[in-house]
Length: 295
Image 1 (cartoon, one colour):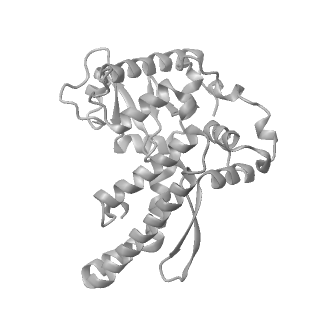
Image 2 (cartoon, rainbow, N blue to C red):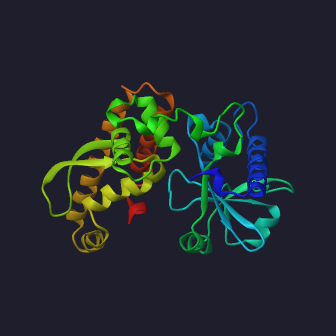
């Protein structure tokens, strides 16, 4: 996960595209803050211009005569956004605009698009080259992430301060014992609930901000598996209603645990990541009471 994997001309090309995306998004967000950006565009713009507050992953797939450029999707890590200009959008009608702005893209502008079925297959077959956006020199005063506190990785996890664990997480943790421990200490929360056909017990839910929907979805499916839901919803409405209530109770308990953690967090970026997790779960309770988006 290093910029060294990119060719110099690719780095220059990607930097130019991302600068174009920043300019386009900023043009739709006047100084008053009352522009036409949607939340996903807001966080991409914030990540590109202020990576010290929370970076975004850049993924590139090399093609015979071009490249496909993606940016990580904080809400759904398995479905990154595609970055395209007007000409690319014409050639790829299967990619829908993330923001259905009726004015559309003008010549020279760049926008974010929802990836297509073909894109998902491409990302499955072709392993993308990855690096954090901070590596492309987009922030005004941001040093490359790999040059920050190089001794951190050699220190034991228990000796790291909260801000240092967060810094290592932002860099991109390897799936080692230390990496997994940092992830669990930053984003692991203990919640009491019963998995399907099991007794109530304390479970650890890890709310990795890069895998937020998957992590919450796993808890929901543990409580009420899809195949069981189909049968109970159709034939046993009272049991179905109780299972929905169980999922709601567990999610509210998880939200409470995250809010309790926030009260004791000193690092601003880490706190912001936890607040976004709370906002994501609050939105589920408000707009998806049947948890239909987690079937």
